[in-house]
Image (cartoon, rainbow, N blue to C red; front, side, top):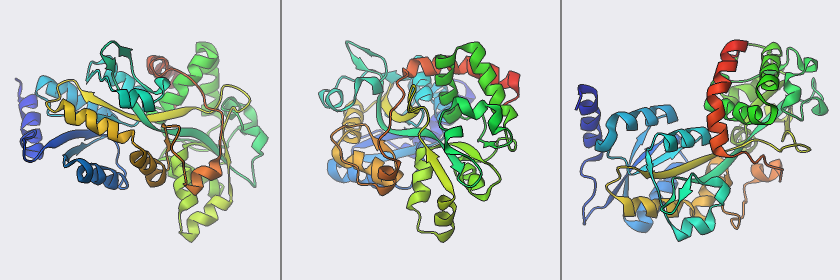
Length: 345
C-alpha cells in the first residue's frame, strides 16, 4: 500500500470510525451533492431506519479519484453523483456493484438506470434537472433563442454567457448535441458559441442568470434548479432580476430539452450492502422524492409523486431529450477535444 493510499484510508477511518455494528448501524456515503436541504433527507432516513449516515463531501471528479486511490480499502457504501456522465464514468471504472431490487425496478424508469445484467443495475437516477435557456426580455426575442442550435447563430453575436465549457453540466449537454449533430456540425456549433460570447466563460449558473438580468448578457445556458431557486426567493433583488428574465425550454419542436440526473449506486467494496440498498430504496420513496422537488427544485423520477413546488410548476411540462447516458459519456472525450480546438474555455 503506497503512502497516499495509507493516508486516505487513515482519514476515512477517522471520519467514519467502525463501519457498523449491531447496536449502532452506520452507512458511509460519498456525496457530490452539496445542498443544505439534503440534511433533512438524510436525517429522515436515520430517524426512520436507525441507520446513521457518515458523509464525505466532494465534487464528482474528487469522489471518483478518491475511490480509485482507495481501491478495496475504501469504506464507501454508497456513491452519490450529480451528473449523468460522472455516473457513466464510475460505472466504466468499475466503482459500483450491481443491485437487484424490486422496489427500485418498480419505481425508477429503465432509462434512468445504469448498465443492467442478471445481477441488477449499476446505479439508479433519483432526480432530474433541465439545461435550459434564459434571456433578457428587453433585448432578446424568445424566437431567437428557443433552440440550442440558435445560440451559435450569428444573430446572437455578443449576447451569450455560460460557465466554463468543460464544466460537467455543459459537457453533458455538448455530448448530447454531438450525438444529434455529428462531429463536424458539433464543432461548427461550438465555435459559434465561442464567437457569440458576451464575455469569457466564468462563474456559476446563478451568475449567468443575474448577468442576463443586468443586461451584461443577452442569453445564457443554465440548470433549471438555479432558475427555480431564484423564482422562489423572497429577496427583492432576486424578484426584480427574475422579472427581467425570460425562460425557455429549448428544442420543444425537435429532440427536446436536455435533462441531466443525480443518481447513486452501491460502492463495489461496500461492507454494508444491505444498509446501502435500503438507502437507495429510501431515495426512491415518496417522502425522499418530495425532498428532491421541494428542497432542491429538482424533478422526481417516480412518476406517481406529485410536485407542489410553485417554481417547478411555473417551468411547466416539457418535452425531454432521450439520449442514453452511455452515449453522453462516450462523447465527452471528443467534445473536450473540440472545446480545446475552438477555444471554449
